[in-house]
Image (cartoon, rainbow, N blue to C red; front, side, top):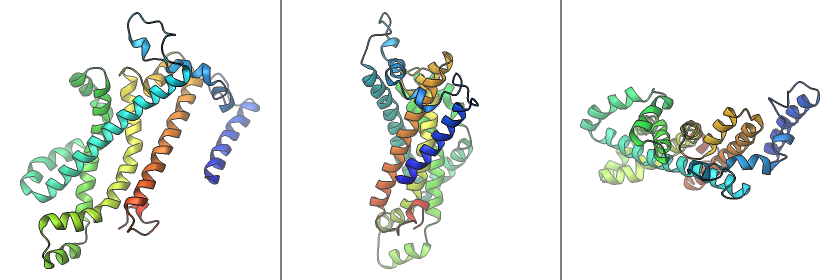
Length: 273
C-alpha cells in the first residue's frame, strides 16, 4: 500500500510540476488538483440517466454523488454480467472440446477463426441483434473474453501432467472424478490468471460499448466529455475507472489466494501449479 500510494503521488507530482512550470496546458491537460478539486461540478455531468427520458429537464434526477454511484454501478454490472457469462460458457465449451472429439472437430476451427477478431468489430453486430440498452454492452464483454478463454481452457487442459491422470486411473477414479479431483485443480491457477488479465479487457470493451449509447455509464460520460471538449471530465472519469479496476484486481487476487490455498505463494499469480 505504501509503494502504491508513493507511485501515484510521484506520477501526480510530475503532472503538477509540469503544470506549474507551464509545460502542461490546463485547458488540455488540467492537473489533478483542478479536475479532482471540484467534485460537484464534475459529478453533475454523470446525471445522464434522466436525460434519456423525453421531456425531463437535464437538471432533474439524483444528487451529484448518487449520479456518480449510479453510473459506476451500471458499468460494473455490465462488466460482471459479461465476465460471468463468458467464464462459465468458455469453461464448459473448452472442457467439451477436449472430452468429446466430435465437438472438437465441429467447434474448435470456428473458435480459432473468430478469436483474432477485434471486439470492436462486433459492435455493429451487437447493435443489430440487441439494439440500444444493456444487452449490447454485455454481449461485447462476452465476445471479448469468450473465444480467448476457450482457447486458454484447452491449453490448460493439455498442459496437465499426464502422470497425474494415469495415477488417478490406476487408483480406480472415474472420468468425472479425474476431472474434478485432478484436471480442475491443475488448470485452475492458470485460468484465474487468464481471468484476471481479461478483466482489464472487459473494462476496455464495455467503455466502447457504452460510448455508442446504451443509456448511461462511464463510457457514455467520456464520450460526452469528448463531444463537449471537457478534458477535466475525461481525466476525472479516468481516475474513477482506474480506481475501480484496481479494486477489482485486488479483489480477484484475494479470491485467487484464498481459492488456490495449495499453490505456493508467488506461483499462483503466475499461473504455476
